[in-house]
Length: 418
Image (tube, rainbow, N blue to C red; front, side, top):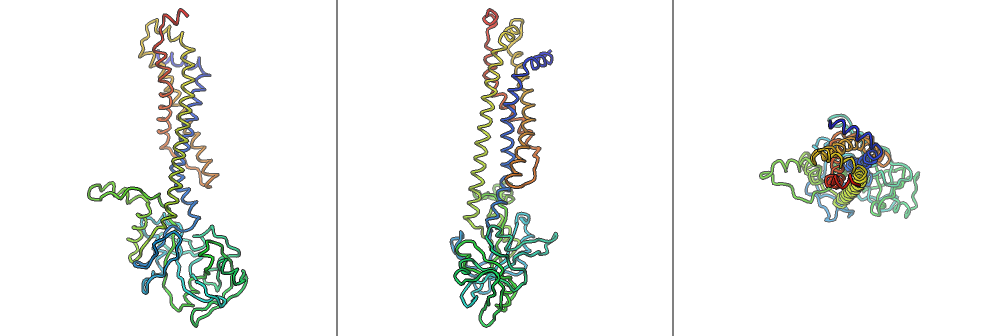
């Protein structure tokens, strides 16, 4: 009997039900789209922000380091404190090897270039190195994709140099010129392949292949530091749990890519190193991601509120239209629980359909937003389907409680008398 009454009721009020279904579907779709983005946009945004340059530096343990990591000049390590040439490849042996995107070694030396003092920096510009599970293509050029370069970076092992724009303008040097670099009695003629525009400190430097700097200094197998770009989560405001009191909480903390956790894991895997996150860069990225997630939460709440209000108005109008029908049911013996079951069954059908449709529409919207904004491939998250159904049920229930109370309070005698 209930099934027949429910089916007849749904068929008789198709217009109202379509409005209710639309309200639930749109609210759930917006919420699921934002939830899907919140789950994925952190990594998407982190990868996009990685174009800003490195966010970690690895140095020999005990090397001198200024207090301000947010752009201050790096002091050279003390005598004897250097990294080996295999330090970059060993980054891919750590627990967070998949989070390390790019890396490049550096070795700096004071020199004379075209008879003028300059800091020469030897590095790898674009090199493919062997790692445990294959090869890894990385280097200085891939680590700084946002730097403006007029010309090109030097090829590996070539007698070439790229010069900072401030130093080049002051000396009248342009791409295509040849200059002589000298350290002590050793000298080499280099082709200027590019002029680099970055921040003021970097604009006073010159970069050349690491092998050329080793020839000028007469020493090899020494690296001052390794800059690396890694995907991390925003820093946690809470201290790590005590492993003795909360071993599971400590394990969860150490398995989350917080900056200090990633730095500690790399240090443990590569003895004799000190890995430091660039505090201002990491904190700034965390602030951006946190505010974006908060914005998406507020938008989801606004969409759900609008859906509840839309469903509330539709359900109230439906109860008013059906007042004679509901009063007649009460008059022939229907109890309040039976009427409530009938009305709630209609709501359940609408919410289930709206939840499924909203999940599909939300996934499509999230895929379109990710693809246009971050160029990412669409990802379907099946685990959000139960959440979509729960949200639809919550919207339907909140939008039906007030109309249901009105329906149960109807006086059959007054209604039927008109």
